[in-house]
Image (cartoon, rainbow, N blue to C red; front, side, top):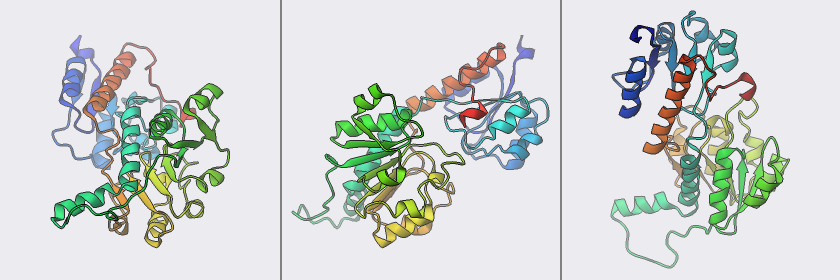
Length: 328
């Protein structure tokens, strides 16, 4: 019966098809604008919802969960990353947390390769030159970049996305190296022709391109700190499509300005939209507005996973994408 439908509050605008399907299945409160909710508005939404559908822009910590009351039973996150949600505190309060894993793998890996090419081949500099109207034609020594074939790619975090990046890199003729909490199974390692490094320090010192593909957790915060960044070759490039907090952004900026690292391609930032202004000024840096998962297909698939998680929960079953504190 309609009166028994779950009350669902969505914190941001979602693709129209996803919102329409939610309205058909549940009692849904959608947002008129796409601006992020304030902390107070988020707290109020949690108190009047059976299910909250947040995104990475909604920070749900223990303090906010303590104000949620007893009605909230499920946080169905629209996205794979859940570092913005205190999963342990949620479970202690009897609130389940789900996410949408696997959906953004190929899209994010595509963006990682796009950034590698953009930095090494100086694509943004070329675009700026053409838009300025100052291009005088082809010249033998103009806009020289570097060939990526034969270069060593270091993948930091060899999960779904890291492996997808490795597959693409192999197709471009790169040599794949990786560091991960656990070593891959032999057959996966062999299929990727990947070299495992137990020591991140040793890998960082040897690769030509470093791709950050690990989640943000307490153990990965500033994993690439000033000391570790200094181990990298001056000719090396670093690319991050994962979480900004993994890199010490101020240390990276200083090293890029000093020429201690050749370039960087960033899609995520340590402090969200508050980006170091000195980083914006550097010609050897490519900055994108968190576009890694921004494909129509990916956003639709994320919505489908959210719908399935909520409907399965409503039917009294364990949601397929349940996040446990041990997974964080």
